[in-house]
Image (cartoon, rainbow, N blue to C red; front, side, top):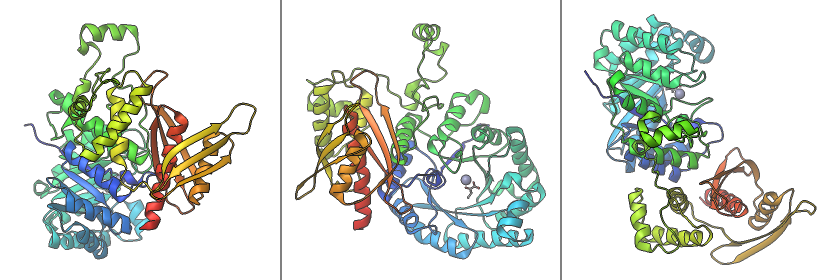
Length: 506
Ligand code: KIV
Ligand code: ZN
């Protein structure tokens, strides 16, 4: 019988643990809103005891997001659980997700606890969480490397204590699909009260098997899959949710199960997560990579033109990739602009629409044909900025060449003034960034710089992402879009600097 598989999204918790990712509150809320539109069943919003920022994010998401369960992570101790509840208590539907490691290696070296002590801590944690909410998930960390007899004992005990979901993480990405599927089967056969809980899986991708392991687990009785958008997460990441979802949808004939995900929102969600985290999606990534639906070989192109299904197993529209190319031009008016945006799924406030329209007109002057991707880039840049633009780029002059030292003069506008400085650097981008530092008085270190062309052609929009730090261990991500890559570089840097200023002010 076909059964629903629940999708537990941990982009904001395990995904945010990716090295170099640091989302602020507004960015997390923005992602949570999109996850709700995507139709995930559970959003793991953070680990409330880990930091004040995590607490605020879980609380903010719990207060705002409706129609989705909001989960907060807690180790198996009362302090963590009480703090998680404090953050979650205003949610429409809340879940406390408590965990403790159960493998010999983790119990001996990390926890320095005996198995019976771990079992007792797990049970007490679930009982504590149960006082707050009916919906309690227990995770046996490093479950795939845990002695199956002990794992079954722990699961039986936590279900008896009230756990409604039991999660078996492949924490270090060590399992293989056959072995992991077999483990889920063993749990189903050997845990006497297993019918009172949903079996969940949480796979890491160290051997590139996270999605395969998750699917194998579903074939053996798992009914919740945990993962992250674009597969981001600790080390090699978590199972990419979009891949699990599309495998189930496209091969329903084989798996016989499906999810409640609105697949048409996948691409938009992927892009949002990529932009806000600064984690670029590899071009050949399944489902959401730039090349996932491109056909290069003549034979393939010919086949697709004759009959799409010759080489395409999924229609790009199913994941929300709109292939209309020529959309608007410089003579298009506000009405057509608004209509096209709404077809693309954007509902903007009047103010956002005005700003985006000005950007559109500026772009239309430089670029003959404006594609959907161009429109999306403009709109996302205008609507994404959730920290005040203390500084905005007013102008930029560059003098550069192969035989001269690059010099940049930059003008930044604040509410009161136009501030101007000049600086030289190792290259034009370096010179711009030094001039910006002189104006703001904040000395930043550039950790990462990437440039992507949004569409093809000489007049493509350049999309720059930077990651900077100003001495503490925090990373600030900025993005800028322009047909001029130096302007895009300057905008990205100023965007990141504005985040630093915002955090200082708070
Ligand atoms: O990978 C893991 O084991 C985890 C648990 C906290 C669920 O992220
Ligand atoms: Zn994990």
